[in-house]
Amino acid sequence: MKLVIVLMLTALPLFCYAGSGCELIEYLIDKTIDPTESKSQLIADFQQFIPGPITANALGNFKQCFLNQSNDTLSNVALMMDTIYNSPQCASY
Image (tube, rainbow, N blue to C red; front, side, top):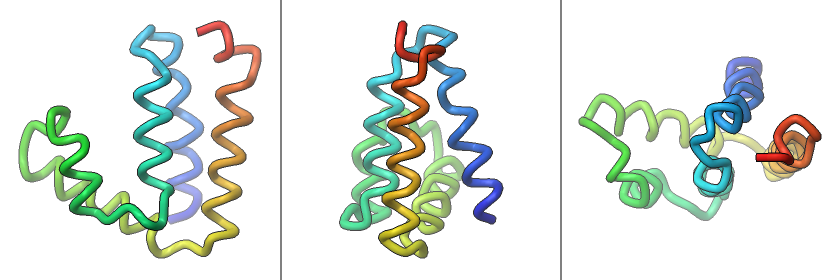
């Protein structure tokens, strides 16, 4: 499961190439890896982007994956995302 999460998070910077704006993605990732943020609060924060209950359930399950991780793992994910966003490939966007 950790491998799936890592692969999914490493694919997120591809949105930078599409010009969709990394700030929103960074905000979503920060909220997702924040252990103090509940699943229901995350869903409420991003309700405008959720087309239906299936997507809301998927987002809740995705958040639960992070809630099950240790604080060390969460800080490593945050460090990885900072490294990706500050990379030369994504920094220009």
